Length: 157
Image (cartoon, rainbow, N blue to C red; front, side, top):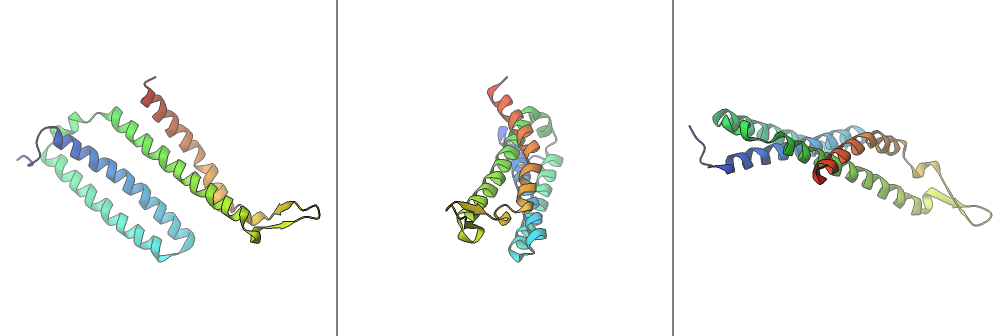
């Protein structure tokens, strides 16, 4: 039994599904952590939607691989690792950027600083949230490793 998709279309479809699954899992993890920290229903809905999309994408990928087994042999693992490392790298850069933007916004808010006798700004401890600082530094090794692998493989060294 063959799918109605021919030639390299099968390979492209399976690679696209794998990449979509990886992105969906990253969004799923982000929604899960945001829900745990904030208890907001917005993040819970995002968590549930990504759980359903992960299941659907996983089942679709499994069915295609079971029907067309030779497509697995054609997947170039090196290219997949480059794509994965690029996704992880840019996701970590996005997280760091969002944290930096939040800190900069708070540093400009008068609620988070006062003026000293000399007219200089003195920032409160609340400008930098400990959870954000922890997230920033915990993700640092993953950013460096994924980014180094991505850049080296992309440049071809």
